[in-house]
Structures are given as structure tokens and as C-alpha cells.
Length: 251
Ligand SMILES: Nc1ncnc2c1ncn2[C@@H]1O[C@H](COP(=O)(O)OP(=O)(O)OP(=O)(O)O)[C@@H](O)[C@H]1O
Figure 1 (cartoon, protein in one colour):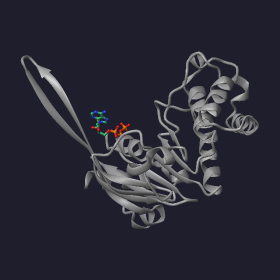
Figure 2 (cartoon, rainbow, N blue to C red):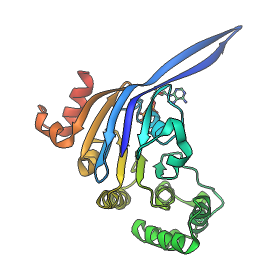
Figure 3 (tube, rainbow, N blue to C red):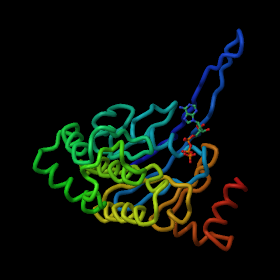
């Protein structure tokens, strides 16, 4: 369970202009609240720059909120971040992989980082490699892999410790439909295993494939937060994508 309570994040940057230093503030996320329940897939949908990544990074404990908090499995992130972090799998476009390691070595390395027992880590690795179709390139170095191959290894890395809470930031971004499909399959399986799953997207068709509960974010604020069924019932446009566009334009 993830309870997001009034999360707000402002970024302040200083730019030198001649002799002067100008301070600019971006309000990336404003007073965002929602709940993600176990066994359901929660989608955070919004256009570019809406605040999705910033929200997910705060929930994963990567950055601190300016105000508000996220409670993950009953533990307040602001108070005991490290205890919670081990129960979270966070996939982001910038999930770190070491260019010189191959897929096998990468997973072995992270098995040690997560302090997994070696037999269990091997078993889980084989399962994920099979599921994601990594076996055929498991000995290739990360630095020589395509974007899709790297994304698959990142996902295997994220799921290696079988976390209770899964946070995916645009998980299928830049992937072909076959690769995207195997990832969507794994996300569905996580839901069946009663995990709490949240993923961000700017593509309505992806949301339509996976989503149980939906929040739409625009300019840092939530403009819709309910079940996906309710979104569909309230729909006035002819397509889901047009409904999303209309809601963002009219917010
Ligand atoms: N470290 C940072 N410093 C300054 N501004 C930032 C920083 N990170 C994000 N922002 C700004 O915060 C806003 C929200 O960005 P964010 O990356 O959360 O959006 P997003 O919804 O994930 O977008 P996209 O779909 O394009 O990835 C943007 O205006 C962005 O420029």
C-alpha cells in the first residue's frame, strides 16, 4: 500500500547572468495525494513535464519532498526511508547499470547489494531472464546492448529482490511492441501476486492495458483520481486518448 499525502516539490536553481545571480523556482509537484492498493495497478498519467517522475522519485525516497509525505506499507518515508527502500523496486529511465558488466554479472552484483541468499538469487535471476527473454544476450556487456535489452536488464534488476512495492517510471518507453508486451505481462503478474504497483505513462493505450486506478497529473496537480472504470463511465469524448486530452486542456 502506498499513501501519498500532500506531496509538494519545488526546485530552486541559481543562474548567473553577468554580475547578478538569478534564482528561479519550479513548482514541479503541488499538493498531490492518492492511494495505491495491493493487488491493483495504479497509473499516473500526464503530459511531458507534468510532474510524474518527480512524484515517483519522492515515493521511492530518491528525493525529499518540499512538504508532504509518502507512507509505504505503513512506514512514513520521511521518518525511516531506508527500511522502506528495501521493499521498493524502482524502475526509471536512469536506473544505473554498469557498462562493463554483462547481464549475468549485473544481476549477481545486485543480488549482493540486496543481500540475497545466493541460491535464491540465482533462482530468481533464471526466472526473470526466462520471463523477459534475456537468456539469448545474457553474456553481452551492457555497453554493447540496445535500448530494449538494457531496459529488460533494468527491469530484472528492479524485480530481483521481489519487492512488495513496484514503481515503474514509463516502463515501456522506447521499446518495440514485443518487448513492451513481455514487460506488461510481468507487471500483470506482479498484480496477481498482490504487489502494489504504480506506473507512470503519457500514453493512454498503455494505461488502458494495465490500469485499475488512475490519477491524471498536469502542471504538478492532480486533475483526476478515481478508478479507471469511473474514468470510462464519465467519458464524454469518443476515445480514451481524446478524453485525456480534453481533461488536460480544460483543467
Ligand atoms: N532537478 C530538477 N531541477 C529543476 N527542475 C526540475 C528538476 N527535475 C524536474 N524538474 C522540472 O519539474 C517539472 C516536472 O518534471 P518531471 O520530470 O517530474 O515531469 P514528467 O511528468 O515526468 O515529464 P516527462 O513525461 O517529460 O518525463 C518540469 O518542469 C521539470 O523541468
